[in-house]
Image (cartoon, rainbow, N blue to C red):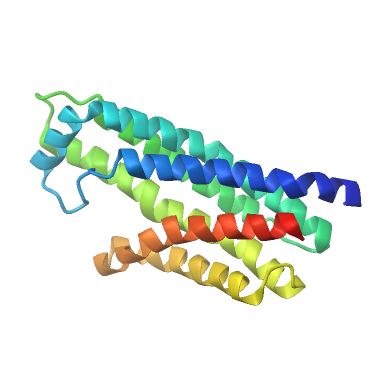
Length: 212
């Protein structure tokens, strides 16, 4: 990769990262009242039927964030390869997996918004569970791969401060371990760390890389 290509990739990685952060924060604000996974089926249906507008808006914001995450991963890989010759495609694989998980979660959230008062509470619970699994553990796996694909090469190549690179490694591990939460619910506490801690790390990483 030429120096000119690296120069073009440098600011390019920051723009989609900030856009992804904006969509994610907006989604969290809009859907802050969504029932927790342990809520009853009737509670979920009641929320779906009385907050359909919020669910649809949240689904749109999440859907918009998905391709932006994929673009972020692609530009991050280009930037890393411009400064370190051998960088695997792990970051892009993670970005695509994470984007796919967000897309699926957004679709299930939109479906939930279409449920009416006469719908089955069990159906509402099942749709909510699918949205949670795809937007939670499945996304965490993808983002974990993305974090590892950026943090490890950056750590080995000295492209990031060691503390920031190690935080990325920790987030990657948390993303992998959080999937066990499907069997051990106590580990689901790692999901906010990956979702929001990972978001802060990604923004910080993009800023640092864009200045080096």
